[in-house]
Length: 281
Image (tube, rainbow, N blue to C red; front, side):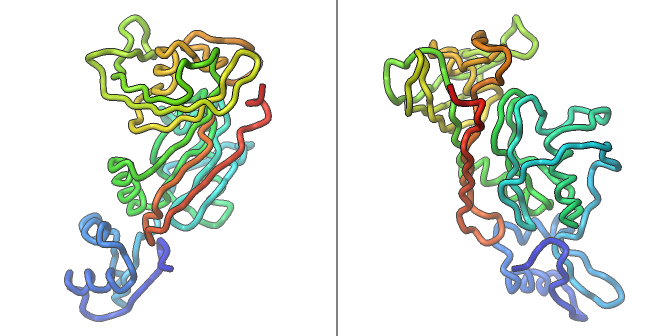
């Protein structure tokens, strides 16, 4: 399989039609050929006229801090990786002064694997949420995976413990979400907000609480948390949306599964984890 940075051909005439034909011969999906040629994903090394797919890029971090924790890598190859984010850790830094995030830790792990990639997160989780996050390791993979996100081809599954029991054992919450004018970071169900759709089903009940499995059609900020509060069943230990049952435990929301087509060969990738021990009640 062709991988980022691999030299794939040597020839003396590298016109655009020739490059297109070579990309096809190398197995590059049609969705990515024009993008690679347009965004310099194909480079020519003089004087030997060698074509290189996905030229290597420097990491966005000039230096990683000493003592940076490892990322828990669940699945990876040359194009992407899936990492397990612990609660309380940001997916990416908000500015250059921050030196610890899941992106920092994933970059460290790729460096230890001798892959000095510029990693890109494809989606995010709230800082308080734990679970699976998808990263691309080159511009091409990001382009394709971003398109998959827009076309709803990347499926995310969450587990959450909530207070009480919903009236229906399964259902769909289709209520738009907007900013809360009375709080700088909160969101709320609002008629003028963005469309937001969450599907849920009850999979367990214990101690006056319910374990829900949730899937999203959209990815609004705090979507699951807002929708479940609006339903009348807030997530356990969600300090922002009003239900702290035990301050010593994280919020009971975990991204447990990711399913998506691979950006290169198109085969389905299914990644699943078990919720951590602290998630059990």
